[in-house]
Amino acid sequence: MLENYVEADGIVLNVHCQDWQAAIDCGAAPLLKKGIITPGYIEAIKKNHQELGAYMVIAPGIMLAHARPECGAAGMGLSVLTLAEPVVFGSEMNDPVRLVLTLATPDDCSHLKLLEALTEFLLRPGLVTKLLAADTTAAALHILKE
Image 1 (cartoon, helix red, strand yellow):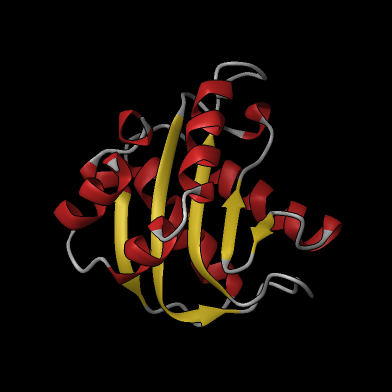
Image 2 (cartoon, helix red, strand yellow):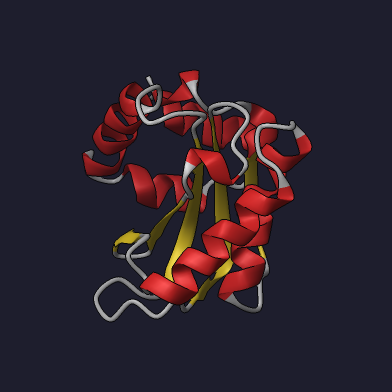
C-alpha cells in the first residue's frame, strides 16, 4: 500500500551527505521539485530539529522528516532517501540514520492512511534492510510494494 504514496521520482538512493542538514535537503528535494512543498517547509524541518531535538528520528536508523502543513506543504507526498554512509542527527537511541523519509501533508488529517501504510512497512521484518540495499529505483519500488 505504501507504493500508492511514493513515485519513482520520489526515491533517491545511496546519497552521500556530510551532515543532517544536507540529508534533510536531499530527502526533501523530490517533494520540492514537484511543488508539493516550498523551501520554507525544508527550513521548518531544520528549525524543528534544532529547537526540539531529534524526535523525528523515529527508530534506529530512520528519520521521518516533517513540519506543520502551514509551513509550506501544498499537497501530500512522501519521499525516500537512502544514505550511502550513516549521518548523525543527535538521537541517543536511534543514531546514526541511513533512511530519511520526508512527509508532507496539506492538513492535519489527510496523511493518516499514509502513516498507517508507512507503519506497516516499517514493522515488517527485513523490509527496511532490503530498501537500504536497493541499488535501483525499480528495486526500491518493488520493495515498497511488498
